[in-house]
Image (cartoon, rainbow, N blue to C red):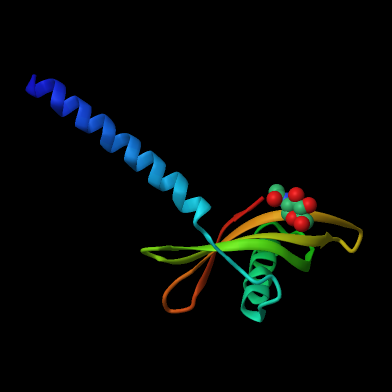
Length: 110
Ligand SMILES: *[C@@H]1O[C@H](CO)[C@@H](O)[C@H](O)[C@H]1NC(C)=O
């Protein structure tokens, strides 16, 4: 009986944990795509990507995005439009972590 109760409460814990991490994504605070601070972060993502893989992306604009606060700082997840080699447009999803000291780190560029 005790074992059953333990297992049940464990499963409830697992379910609660899974739900709360899914919720967190939905509860991202939306950003203003025209906020100069957001544009700066998007530019950083593009510059950093260009350095890393020698591409020539140029930021066209920020479409949408959100922020999420984590223990290491604030993660900006942005949907941006870029121009590649002055030819064609693509939409990219980027994540930039801004540390509490203001330093930035590109987490993903897809
Ligand atoms: C990014 O934003 C553009 C323009 O609003 C939209 O068409 C596109 O579906 C978005 N991409 C993703 C992956 O959310």
